[in-house]
Structure formats: structure tokens, C-alpha cells
Length: 319
Image (cartoon, rainbow, N blue to C red):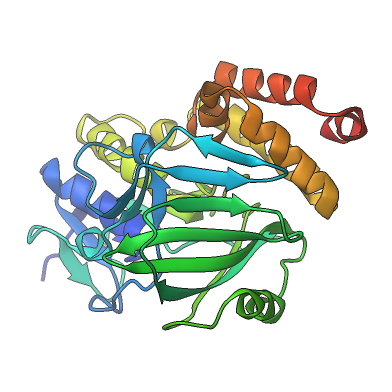
């Protein structure tokens, strides 16, 4: 019996793995995905800035008003969205679903983040509310921040979040802080993932490839954006690794990892001061640091502007 050889096999059925499998199939590549639980439902809430996402990305809720609080209130002139998990999960019929890896020209590891030391942790609950705003960060009550985002209808996810700590703040403490603010609503959402995860060896994609943003913890938007580019590289017989990690992307990521180390050294008061300065930056500087994966000049300008605007007691820590 002949051995079936695929063009592409993706190991891992999360949003990143399925995005890559879809993109490869759309390029006409003989594609399979290894997913031992293909009928599972995504329970996590995946959010992103709308301008980070490729055209046609399915969304479940959109917030055109985004506010952040540090020492004072700031309006962020960007649209924030919650992604449609059901659509993220869908695969075209051309993608075969396997239980075990099979021979392929390209095999991608998309099984999720490796274990790191610095973590982002959060505990959330869904409540009913008429609010149509997204509060991304509200640092006014301590060294954690409150994150709220509408899910559609009158449902709102409210999370108590520790942006970065080594080791991560315990979920028990976060749960207690959240419940001190409000009565728990529906099913609890728990978040724990590394911000400094090492990249998996070999060919990888998504969080396994180190896509997690060291400053925000986000990776799904990057995966959705890069999936078609990686598929096109394979189709045209180019090296997909250069798409996944271009020299510019490597430099930007290293710069942001330095920023993570700075953040880990700040106490609660310094953290509020830091974000007060950050949210006062020009929106283009904010966007470059949060979203410009290959924008070396933009990230450098953002960090320079942050340093110049920081109060004297913070500057020495930003070096």
C-alpha cells in the first residue's frame, strides 16, 4: 500500500493551526491537520485590534469606543473586536483531519506555547450589561487591571488580569479580587500563558513559533495574518521560515522582550505611571509598539518617545 504524502500537515487544531490549514488548502496544497479532538468548542475569548486583522476575519462583537485608565482616563482611537470562535474553527472539506501525524513535505507544529517563566494570568466571568465600550486596562485599583469587552447582545466579559509577572499571579488571588468587584456571573474563564515562551524546534506556527506578543500576550491576530503568506510561500517554493520570522520581526520581538523585562521590574505605582505615559503617546506610537510586528523604525520611535516622556524616577528602569 502506498504511503500518502501530503504537501502540508499541521499538528494542532487551535485557531493558529486551523488558520494555516485553511490557507494552505485555499492555495491548492494537499493539506491535513492533526487534531485528536476535532469537535471541541473553543472556550477562550480571542480579541484583537481590528486593524491587525486581514480583511474578512469573522468577528462576533465590535467596540468602536475603547478606554484605558492609568492615573487618568484615555480614549484609544482604534476599534477592538472579539473574534467569532465558530468560524475560526471551521475547515474546508479539502483539509483532512487526522489522529496521528503523516508524512508531508512540510510539517508545522501548532500545538501551542512552550513553557516560559514570565506569565500573564487572568480570571474572568460573563455578566449582563448594557455597556458597549471596551475597557482594555483599568489600573486604578492595584497591580492588576480590569479588562472588559462586550461579547454581543448584552453579554460582557469582565476579567481581573495580571499583565506580566514571574511567576504569574495565582488564579486564586485574581478570582478573589474579581469577586470583590462584582458578583460572579456565568462560566468562569481562566487565562495562564507565558509571555517569554521559547520557540519550538523545527517548523512551527502560532504560539509554538513564539508569536505571543511579550507586551500584550496576543498571538491569534499574527497567526491569522501570516497564514496566507506562509501558504503562498509554500505554493511558490519559497522558505516559509522567512515569512514566519523575518529579520525585522526578530529584531522587533527582541526589543519587545526587553520591554517585558522592564515591566517585570516595576511595582504597582510605577506600573500605573508607566501606562499613564504610554497612553499619552501619539496613537501611531502606540500602534507601532502594540501591533507593528515588522516595524523596526516605528517600535524604536515609540520606545524613544516613551523614554523622553517618562518621569525621572522611571527613566533609569527603562534603559
